[in-house]
Amino acid sequence: MTKADLASLPLLPLFSAARKHVSNDPKKVAVVDQTKKQVFTYRQLLQDASVLKKTLLEDLKLELTGDLDERRIAFLVPAGYDYVVSQWAIWAAGGVCVPMCTTHPVKELSYTISDSDPSLIILHPAFEHLKPSLQEAYPSIPFLQLVPHTGREMMDSLPPFNEPFPLSRRALMIYTSGTTSNPKGCITTHKNVTFQSECLIDAWKYTSSDHLIHVLPLHHVHGIINGLTATLISGATVEMYTKFDPAVVWDRWAIKGSSTMFMAVPTVYSRLADYFNDHVRSTEREDTARAGARALRLVVSGSAALPTPIKTKFAEMTGQTLLERYGMTEIGMGISCGLEVEKRIDGSVGWPLPGVQVRLTNKDTGDIIPPGDGQEGMIEVTGDNVFLEYWRKPDATRKEFTADGWFKTGDVAKQDESGAYFIQGRASVDIIKSGGYKISALEVERKMLALEDIQEVAVVGLADEEWGQRVAAVVKQRSGTPPLELTSLRTRLKEEMATYKVPTVLKIVENIERNAMGKVNKKLIIQKYWPEKA
Ligand code: MLC
Ligand code: AMP
Image (cartoon, rainbow, N blue to C red; front, side, top):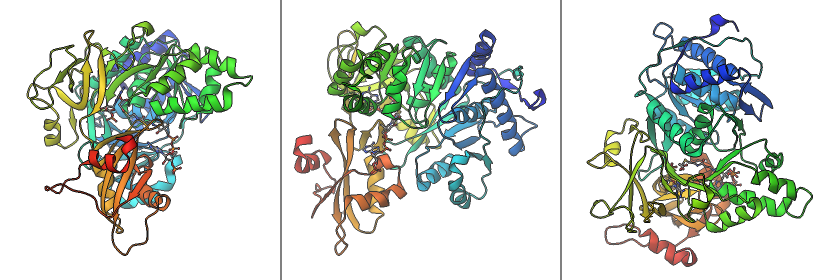
């Protein structure tokens, strides 16, 4: 690589921050890639992003304009340095990042591709085996075979920088399930992405001395914004893993002081607690493990309600009171507890983040509930954190906003006199949260109904301590078909949808009760078949 290979980078806040980190410390490590077992500096990251930007523009024959001009670029790259380079290169070239889920079956990937309508797909060699089926389905979309990067800086200089395009441009598209049966592409702009990251940096005081152990998937805001982008804007180091493994996390924590931050969903803390009890407690590793975990500066739980038993167990093991915060794909993070442990309130997700406005409204009338009066209401949010639109779905976008422009989250909460929020759950029974993933019951039902042996189905979320909720299916089989059995049904459904959406509980019934309108009352279904969960 020579300087001539480097395309210029727009001075977006992220790249401007990275340039500053290099000038403060040219050797500062941005990414520790635990799959490659290599480290990558901010300087190399800027160089590699600039080279890949050039390749993207060349492949699309856009060298002359030097601008992807909000074209979507989908990418299927494992969590690690290559992911970060791909994301930065797309942003540098003026494109919209469409990160694809590395565990999705071909059919889900195909949906993302057809809906986002990308100009190009970046494919990491780890996913080469998927290329023939994707290429067959989308013969007109070019593929860019990513050449994995190695941790070797080729030169000292940085790419040139130029004036950025407006931050109102679209930056990121994240697919999110909702009350419709197909996931929607939630679009955030550069302004949104920057604001979402900076308000967390402000609240949680990320600094360049921080070191995050990153184990979350990189097709959702928790992993992308809180984990990756906020950390890199701060000049800290992000240590990336392709998959969460409790053994690895406890081993890393045991090296006291080698990491400072950890962020995860409640299921991960439940797994960490189980692993500690089974493999660490009463062994010679116990003291170092406890001391290392206790020394962490910031340990955050979110994306789903944190059950008190998990919080209590984790505190007993580590001395850490998990910091809870509330967020959503459409808003990044909205509400958070603060760094001062003594001010955290049990069961509360805290107070609005700096610059984010939150209010509660009456579920039936839409009237604003006076702050702090303890009534249950729907959470509404406004601020620069709030997304721009659902991709090519103006009606769906409009429906989610009030007449005065606030985003309707669909979550129910109460607020106490101190202004602290307490999440009470979702208004819709058709939205399930399992392992921190949001799942549309309607989507699962539609895909199950496509199987010929299923005549009717109702999908519900069952409360579960480890997963938050489990996806359960009540099924009426088509007569004359062989008895359905959970394991083989799951195998078939894993071809159709992401594993985390596939029901883990199955109930075969003679009839699914419906009301006069033909609707299923899911609360009654849970009461009837799983009274202990109702
Ligand atoms: C997997 N399994 C599940 C499941 N996921 N069962 C029930 N519910 C789920 N959600 C099953 C699999 O089918 C499999 O069964 C077995 O459990 C092990 O699967 P796995 O894939 O190996 O699970 P694992 O890798 O251990 O994943 C668990 C996890 C993961 C918690 C690490 O789910 C995860 O990373 N969740 C994070 C999701 C996230 O980032 N959400 C943020 C969204 S943004 P079998 O039969 O195949 O063996 C957002 C906004 C905000 O919410 O506020 O942050
Ligand atoms: P997603 O659409 O995948 O981004 O998920 C967002 C949803 O996760 C929110 O609408 C909430 O229902 C839920 N959620 C996020 N954080 C919390 C939390 N701390 N407590 C309870 N629910 C949460």
